[in-house]
Image (cartoon, rainbow, N blue to C red; front, side):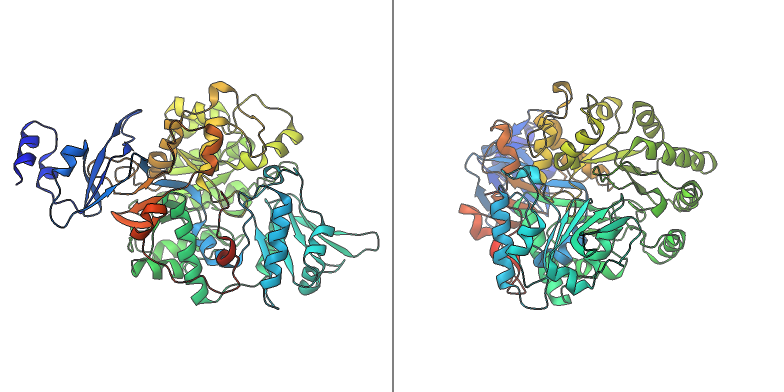
Length: 588
């Protein structure tokens, strides 16, 4: 052993395991936030076999350097644990990323419409021009939505579909024609707006659930398998660019198991997955959910980890966020709150009973306190017959959960995954329900009660997949349009917000012992930032990205001086892809 390492060991400065380790990679000259406690920073860290081996001063960590060790000087930059989205839809997003024009982060409607027109010019005949969520009119300087007339003028000869939250969809005239929609086209839970002559205008309105939007999107084109593989690789690279190293995939409509998971599994087995992905299984067919979960319990290998692709970190698979369709209460604040059907309790009880008996962790989508009240009654009933006994379960969203319900969630050992959906929809909620004094969701109260909380985005169809607007929202309480929706006492500190999107999110996949802090023994997942998150102008937090992202001790993204360290990706396909020309999240 190196003499200095022996001396440091004797002094108790490094552990025996660290002193014996040959570091594979060392980062020096950093402001490294260990997140072990508020305000704890170190200068350097050593990585061995994909995990943090030691942290400390430059001198103590460089003592672990040997001939094969790579040393990266981060030049005084802030280093944080890799971000972890506790509730998102990365698997579905990856399959579609290369064919979607992203307005995420675009600052003006004028530029958004220019992008739409430019993309239509390069899109071949027979393909759709699609903008599928991740934006709000409040992010634009103009503070308004595009009009159908503007969309038709920009793109007269290619079909266009634009999804606005889970409230509206816009089709241009060519899109209406391509789909064959007429005045006689009808959907449950939605309407196709007609003009005075009785012809479709192209405006789709969810009332209140989004099935009309789902169904219409499902009729547009999809990428072929090879392009889906390429698309998923480039989507994960964009997540890495934004500092993400982990995500918990909550399933999603149109994301059927196992078929739509094949691309991600393929990449994982090839060692090409650059975001640790834990997933839950989302029932797709109303009335058939119990059959789905019964079949999945019989066929799925518990706790299977295919090279960073987890069923989740627990001893079994995970179910949700759709356990039964009758329990879903879409967050469409353009319409009144939906009333759940009377059949919900019986259907939910059957599924939750099956899951608890088979020790499957579960999560359930619930926006409103009224829905949570009924969900909790079912879960409590199941618990009395078949105790949860520490089985982890999650309420997703919980914008209007009340204090009594929070106490009951805590008593049952539940956690809550919160997202910045109010960043995109706060104005719509206030317009419908009036100004609020209670924090929505009440994160401060959750933390006071000691409930596990994970922060995320719910990307990519409603909210954006960009994690930094979510952190900005958590430390300001402000929407994309600047509306302050929280009381000053409720906003989170920067440490608290970062903790929720690292350690807090790790709880949601049962990996809280493995990641979320930069301390010895945890995964070497981290991001190097171009500016100091802890002291920078708060308004600029939403525009942060990484300059160096490392997952399991391997560089997965690099920019500027760190660009040569990053592995190359194949070019974006198809060649007309919006991603080839604009990239993903627009934060420049």
